[in-house]
Length: 323
Ligand code: NAP
Ligand code: F7E
Image 1 (cartoon, rainbow, N blue to C red):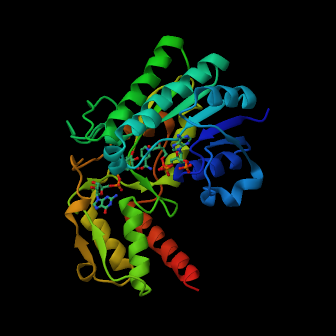
Image 2 (image 1 turned 90 degrees about the vertical axis):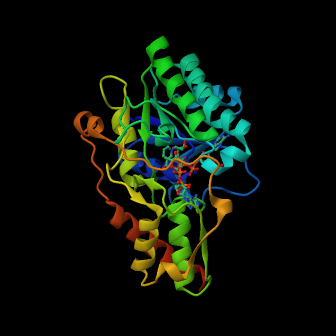
C-alpha cells in the first residue's frame, strides 16, 4: 500500500528536502501551502509534477481539518512556522499564532479526523536558549531567549500532551541548526555564503554581520530530514535531539567560507550593532546519543563539508544569474 504524507511548510528548506526524500521512498506526498500573491515554490519546482499541493493556513483551523479529511495522510510532518528568530521580536503575537498555536491546530485536526495518523513536530534547539548544561539532550531544561523559542517550547509540550492525553503517535524532533544551499538568505550561514559569492564575483564589497562570537551546532538539512522520517517509523512515539555534537562560532564559519573562495574575511566583514539580538543564545551543542542508539541516525556531512557545499552552490548560482 502506498504511504501518504502531508507536509506543512513544504515550500521551506526542510519541506523541500523532506518531500524529495519521501518521494524517493515511494510516498504519495501532499504539501500544505498558503496563498501568496507571488509564487513561493522555488525550492520545490523540480518536484512539482510529483507533488500535490493544497491551500490552507496555520491560522485557519477549518482549512486544516478539511485538508486532513481530504488527504487522509498516514503521516503528518508539521514544519510550517515563522522560523526567523529576529522577526519574532518584531512580530511576537504572529509568531505565537503560527509557531505555537499552529501546532495545536494541526494536532486538533489530526485528533478529529483520525487519531492513528502519525505526527511529527519540528521542535528546535532554540528551546534550550540560555543553556543549563552542555551538551544539551532530551531532558535538558528549556530556557528560551526569544518569542520564537518560547513559541517552540509551547509547540513541544502540546505535542507531548496530545501523545499523553489521546495516545496519539506524536513525536517532537528537537533539531539543532541545519543548513543547506536551500537555506533562507537571512539566516547567518546562507547570508555568509551568498555574501562570499557576491564579493568573489565583484558584485558586493562588504558584508555586515552581528555577533561573531555566537556558537552553533550546525548540520546539513538533507541529513536531518531522514531523522524526522525515522522517528515516525518506530514502534512507539518519542522525542529526540538531532545534532552533530560539534559547535563552531560565526567567526569560524566566516573564516572558512571566505577562505574557501580564496578571500580574506577581515577585508570584507563589518559588524553592525543593529544585527545583535535583544537576548542572544550564545552557545548550543547537542547530544544526539538517543537518536544514534534508537533510530540509528548519524549525520553524514560535517561542518567544513557543509560550508564548502554552500559556498560552491552560491558561487555557481551567482555566476549564472550574473550571466
Ligand atoms: P523555513 O525555510 O522558514 O520554512 C517555513 C515554512 O513554513 C515555509 O514553507 C512557509 O511558507 C511556511 N509557513 C509559515 N507560516 C505559515 C502559515 N501561516 N501557514 C502555512 N505555512 C506557513 O523553515 P525551515 O528551516 O525549513 O524549518 C522547518 C521547521 O523546522 C520550522 O518549523 C522551523 O521553525 C523548524 N526548525 C528549523 C531548524 C533549522 O535549523 N532549519 C532547526 C530547528 C527547527 P511560505 O513559503 O509561504 O513562507
Ligand atoms: O543565527 C548570529 C545570531 O539566524 C545564528 C532558525 O532556523 O536555527 C535558526 O535560528 C547565530 C545567532 O539562526 C548574524 O546572533 C551573527 O546567534 O542563522 P541564525 P538561529 O537564530 O540559531 C534554530 C535551531 C531554529 O529553530 C530557527 O528556526 O548567528 N549572527 N550575525 C547572525 N544571524 C543572522 N541571522 N544574521 C547575521 O547577520
